[in-house]
Length: 572
Image (cartoon, rainbow, N blue to C red; front, side, top):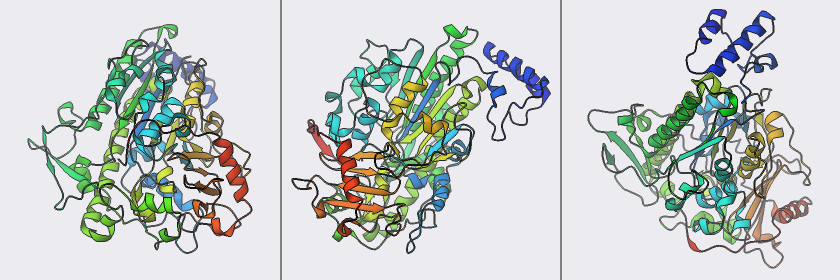
């Protein structure tokens, strides 16, 4: 709309779908003839342009919500975030993560979301836990792992939380919302997930379509690597019947992610179509949660993405520092039920290179699926200016960093996640990046605020609407401020991330939890010691004066530990 001509605006006023859009056009014409600017330079509406939006806008009524949850997405694998990392503090010896020693897949759709109007990206966002199950349970039910007892994959999360506490349930119980979901949203126990996405009294799938059980064997051939390393699955799909590329035609949407995206698009369209011609009071809004499994292993994507992706550059691996770490840290880095996490990189170089390429391809494929969702929203002007889009990963991912692959550590690579909010009318200033530390728990309370839902259960998490409105807010270095991210792992193991430091404390920390060999401290922006963005130098042995403040902050956030619930913890 930024360069829209008068004739183009006139043509849009005959847009056949929505009566509300005609009202928008009338407001636009009024502003034009009043010589008022309607559109900002970044493509977002000015205050005058906002007057043309229907009353059911994201700021005043019941906005639509599209929540996109990606699995195992590494922060620095988003090209735009990799570029931004060059602005972070640089280790004088090893540089920073924005150098050339990282893997940068093609992510044009997520890049466009980040750079587009009304989007705010939290560059210091972190997961609530370090594995899929506890992370998703935490932010979908508003309880950190130490509050629910869900610490690891394999824990029976559905026995630790109540249906009434589910984020999705709050939308189900709001008469204005139609609620749908597909893909990997919750973790495991698919038979019980439907009740979070359907009518308030339903316990069946209904509107929720679970697509995480696999993609079957029809329509493609799986090609395995020459030497299949258990735990590091990477495969290629060759579409049969002459098909060599992913297509948006339904017949060719063979992956579970493509099917989930198609389902979600169809459901959003069904709500939009049903609203056509209705008065504002009678219109529905949608809450749609779309879970995209890739780049979780096995890394199965259409072969075109595997072959045409950016060349994977081996991430920088600093000299071994693991011998000086606490015993629990060494265990988390060096142990995996399938294969020692660094063995693939050190002993099977060819397979390691293929693994990096496969991960890169899976990220690019995920980007394409995200693009399908956003392009649908943006194809409809009313949806574009009345839909909140949230893109997050459930946790980060190691690619050789700290001599580890995958997740399940308390370091930056595992905890740091992409988090992008696009809220109509919000976050229009510069910079578009917010540097304040936040965690996944912020999603629940912030959505309750934006969507005008007041009758919801007691939950943990910080409402970050003020940060979305004012992304240039400077993070506070005062440890009494709420500018902090908390990530929990095993019972009594956790890390806090402030703007300056990361503080880790393990569950074998002794009676007081202050044994020098049970803690780690790393400098991310402080001035007392050299910058350490790679978390290669543990400052704990230097006994810095700020350690007491960090320890007190962690203890204030975690006052009690709920015992781990039943289940068989696993690492995948």
